[in-house]
Image (cartoon, rainbow, N blue to C red; front, side, top):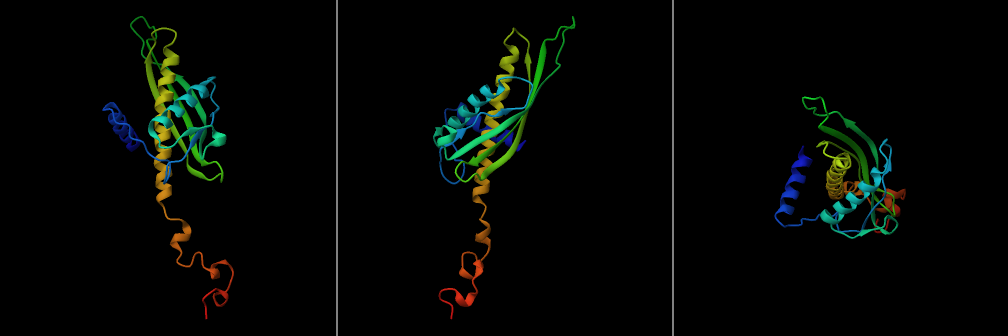
Length: 193
């Protein structure tokens, strides 16, 4: 719920002409988007999702969008589920509205180290749409994927920033980084008498 409030707030700012952008971690870095694996039964969703995640990165995130092989950070994941649901029928029992539910999982990875910076996070959405013409289902799915892409990118940024602000485990240990912490007795460490 909190996530949707943040997204609504950002979209409200965008509607006012402002383009707030956030970093993925402590500083702006280049970002790549891999084509997500598609475990669903609906073909070609990954192409539309890739386009929408790339758009969301450009719209909301500080840093350059690059090929995954050239980027500092990479967004990767999979489409776990895509299913339709019944909808509203008229008095003649003709289906007038249908819905689609999509579930995906994504993570943000440092390409060089392989460290997962955020995630894996699951995002889902359920969107209803009127059945007006042959393009209605495709349009409804595309709208759902655009909303999911926005949510995933913003959630990954929030998690990456939250994880970056946590102190490293060594920062909590007052003896970290000293010679006696690495198997060297305190007597043998420099400056010890």
